Image (cartoon, rainbow, N blue to C red; front, side, top):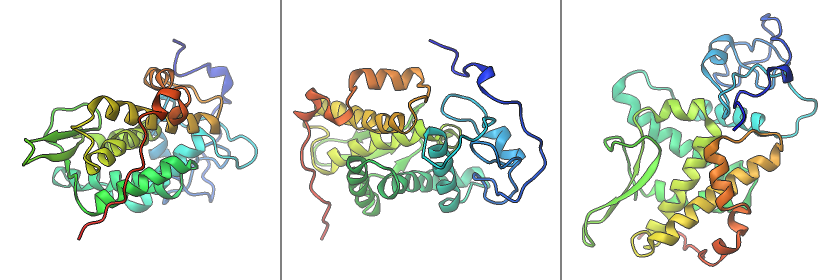
Length: 259
C-alpha cells in the first residue's frame, strides 16, 4: 500500500504565515494562516487537525468552489464547531460526544449530497430525538459501534463510543462520519425490530450504507486517497447500496411514531 502521506512534491511549499481576514474553518474565530490553503485554518488548528489520510492541511487550494473530499472535511469541521461546544473537563466528555454524534448525523441529514444517506439520517434523527439508543462510554471499544444487551423482555440498544471519540472525529471527520452512517443503519434496524432477528443482513446493510457514503465521497474527489479500511469496505460493496447482493436485503424502514 502506498505511503498514505503521498508524494510531497504534489504540495507547494507552505505559504507565508501572515494572517488574512479569512477565518479559520475549524474554530471560526482566529484568522486563517493563508487564504490560499485548501482548508483555511489558524496556526493552532492547523497543528492539531489532520485529514483522513493523516496529512496536515498544508495543500494549496484548487481553483473553483466544487466540493471535494478536503472541502467536505472542512464543512464537517465547521458544522461541528458551530453546533457543539468543546469539552472543558472530563465530566463533560459524554455530553460532548452525544452532541458530536447528533451534529454529525444532522450534517448527513441536511447537507450530504446523497438522498439514500439523507433519508436514513432522518430516521436516525427520530431515534435520537426519542432517546431509544443512548450513547455509552463504559464499553471497551476502539471504534464507534452499536450493541444490544438483555433478553427479549429487557433488550436495550446502545451506541458504544470510545472515550476519545470527540478527538477521533475532529482528526478524521470523513471516516468518523462514515462510522455514524454504519451505526445509524444498526439503529434503524433496531427500531424496526430487525437487529437481533436478522443479524447477518444487519451487518450487510450497515457496511453497504457505509460504502455508499465512501462512494459518494470518492465521487466528489476521484483523487481522494483511501486508507486500508475504506478500501476493504468498498471492495465488499463496490456499488454501495446498488451492489446486487445488497438490494436483496434492503427494506422500507418505517418512520418512528411514538404515542
